[in-house]
Image (tube, rainbow, N blue to C red):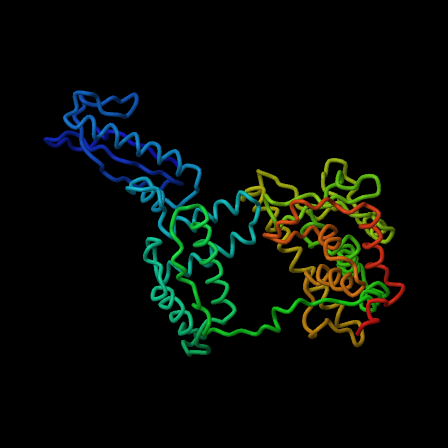
Length: 429
C-alpha cells in the first residue's frame, strides 16, 4: 500500500491552478481525492508542499502536513484501499468500525493468529453485506438487531431454488457477535471510544446447546485403551501424536506440531502456547519415557530442518505466493483436519469407547481437558496444573507475585496424571 500527496500538473489547469490530490495505490488499483489547487509556481515539487507565495499557504501547509502524518500511520495498518483513503481524510484519528476491524485483522496476522484472523475476516464480510461501514457512535442495539434479524431470516436454497433452510445456525450468530463485541471492547480499551454497551443482551433470545460447549475429556482407562490398540501406520501416527499431547501436559496440537529440535534439552521439553500470541511464555515440562519413545519414532533426521518433526512445511518463495505464516498455517490446517478425522476412526475401532461427560466426536482439545480433569480428580493443586499446562487466570492479581513450583513437584504431578498403569482417577466417581 502506497499513499502520497502531490500536485497533478498532467491534468487540466483551472483558474485556481492544478489539482492537489491524495493518491492511494494498492496492487495496481488507484484511488485519488482532490484536496485543493495550486499554481505550479506556488508549489514545492521536492517536498510536495505549497510555497509561501500560495494564497492559502498557512492553512494548506498545515493541512497537508497532517495528511502526511496520517499516511505514515496508515502505512502500518494494512487496510483496504477505501479504508486507507477514508482514514487519511478523516478530521480525527478515530477509525470507523470496519476500518478498526480491518486493523485488528492485520494485527492478528502479524501475531501469527491466522485462525482468529479467518474468523474476523468472515465476520467482517457478513457485517459488510448487511450493515456496511458505520461510525462507532452508530453502533447501538437497534443496528445490531437489524443484523441479527437478517441472519435469523437468511434463506438457504438448493440448486433448484427451493428453500431448504431458514436462518443461520444460532452458534454461528453467537460467533459473529462475539467477534464484533471483541473489536468494540478493544476500541474502548485503546481509548478510541466510550463504552455505550450496545451488545448487552443482544443474543439473549438466541439459545444454543450448552452441552456442545461442555469440555470433553478421557479418563485413564480410556487412555490405556488408546495406548494398547493395534493400528496401521497412518492411524498409529495420529494416535501417537495424540498421546504425546497428553504425556507433555495436555498441550495443544499446534504447540507439539511446531516443536523445534532446540526445544528438547537436558530431559525437558520447552513449549510455547501459540494461542497466546505475543503473550505466550515458554513452559518447560519433563520429557517422560513414554514421550521420548514417540519423539524418537517420528523426529526429523534432516539437519537442515529446524523442526523436531518433518510435518511443518518448508517455505519456498519460488513455489508459493502466500507469506511464510500463511503457507505454514495452510499446511497445519490440513494436517489438523486429517488428524481429527483419524482420531474419530480410532474411537470407532475401540469397542465401547466413549468421551466424557457426554459422548461425542473426538477433538484435539480432549488431551488438554483430560490432563486437567484427571489432575483435579487426583487432588493436584490448580496452580501446579496451570504451570504445567501454561495457563494463567486473566485478572488474577496474586499470579503476579507467585513464583514457580519446584521442578520436581511439577514433574511428579505430570507423571502421576499420565501414568495409565492404574485408574486412580476413578476412585471418586
